[in-house]
Length: 103
Image 1 (cartoon, rainbow, N blue to C red):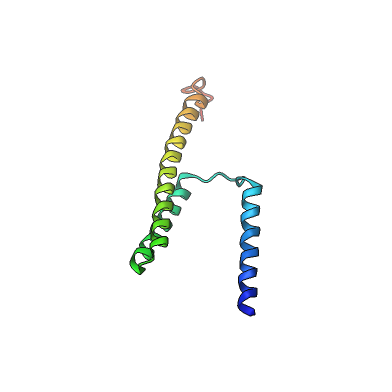
Image 2: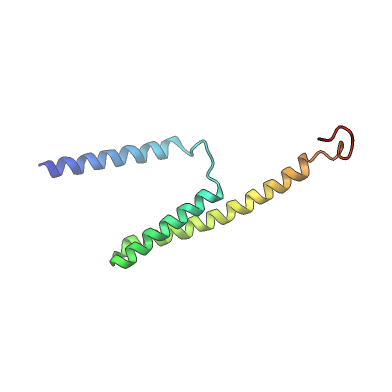
């Protein structure tokens, strides 16, 4: 009886977490390329653990998440680089360079 209650509680909690995650949308803070890189490393470790222990599902899932996170980190890094180049060209104030007002 206790085992059934534990399962029921776990299922309800999982459903509540998934519902809040899916219904609330994206988090207000955007994940940067460093975050995706760390997720990729962690997922690769989970995949390696699954491969060593002989658990196919864990190994495949970890590898899939690792590849996806790596690709996302790579594209985010490229996007961050583009944004930094745009900002440096757009907002670099060359008007007061080499004058007495320059700091």
